[in-house]
Length: 505
Image (cartoon, rainbow, N blue to C red):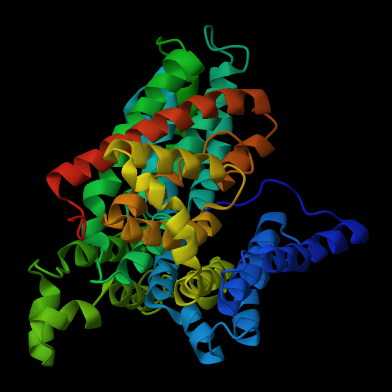
């Protein structure tokens, strides 16, 4: 989940100016739109530019800015008020909410810290191994909890290890600290691609795939064959390039860093009852997602649908991943953390989940729906349809490059909300399967490594003052380009092995 690394201005004049930018840019887009666009399309363009401008400048809180489409789309006659409101209650928003509550329970129990330290103390004690350890741990945790929470949790551990390791010979001059912090951030960025709930753009992709004709239903299990391979391929490459070429580290052992980690791990003591029970809920939820089944796949949903009198072919419409996520979240409020103790999650803890992200999703879904209904996506899709004349590899490279560098300066969630309907329409007008153009975009949007404003993990490590902007840009630019090639490889592999539903044609 991306966020700006800049701090909001405290000056009233500057804030007022930023607020005015939204309606001003929106009106300019409305008046400057091509004459062939219908009134609804012009209205959609105005709302989109207004909302995105407030997202980018953070003139008002991003969740509040996400409510603009709910007001302006009906006022401008783009859609009915009831239609605009429905976008804010999409079933994927419930899936995201369930994931947030599960992640919050993991954080509150301290389970994530135990997993992190267990992984880090296993990898070894050399500076290179420690950097790999933080990279792998960050990626692994980011598959299940937000990349922001992952980075914030690992950051004090990384700084503690860096301070002790920098004292040893061969790891001086701050290079190890920079490498360790950047590996932590980059692992969090990439790890979210691995699972459907790992990062919001994955769910935006899923929602747009559902709206294809015929619909393409991508659940937790369908996502794994292309999301997980990208993580498994890209994470080792990042570690190799970072520790050998971009920020070279010695291969020798450094007991200082390992001693720091062992002390941290020892201080945790034995696994608590709360940790064990949260882990049990977490494992059961993941297994239910993986074994649910779906179109063409057997699973428990088909069996349960039979008992409930639901046609087996419609089971996925009634028993989806959102049902599993919400049911798991409810159990967290029911299961006690210990005998006679409080529940694994209480409402005071639950209130800390990023509720504003749900509004951001709703606003994005509303804009995406308006693009489709007003045929604005058809207009922009026609402009991009020329890409389909390129070889398939050229299409993937073009989309991946454009998405990667676009998201360096904009929110990845905002980028996906705007790009998905356009890419979908471009593919349809060009006569190719829309998934071919949508997949490289969603895989690339989390691979932005150059700037602090690109992702929340980048901003967090830069905010420590221990990573220079020059180092981040130098390392990030190389990894951006490598990421484009990895996305190309995974997309070609997915296409060749027919792992993606709806990719035929």
